[in-house]
Length: 80
Image 1 (spheres, rainbow, N blue to C red):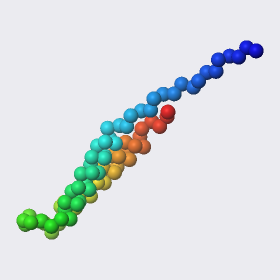
Image 2 (image 1 turned 135 degrees about the vertical axis):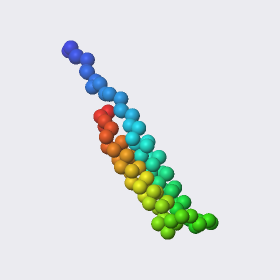
Image 3 (image 1 turned 90 degrees about the horizontal axis):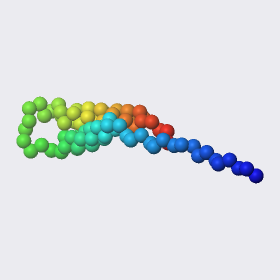
Image 4 (image 1 turned 45 degrees about the vertical axis):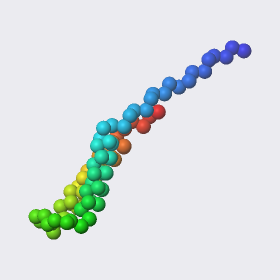
């Protein structure tokens, strides 16, 4: 019986996460921190405090962070 050697499929190493994933995570974390900081009471008055700029900027950073994280996570090559 002559058995031929079995060929193992070659597997490519997984591609690392792109930089957009990490930028998104950082923006998401900063956005949450700014929102939390914006909800705390201010000890000194600021100009246009009634517009709550910390909440707006926190929400904007959180939104961009979520988008960049999704782009980085879904855009990578999933082949093993």
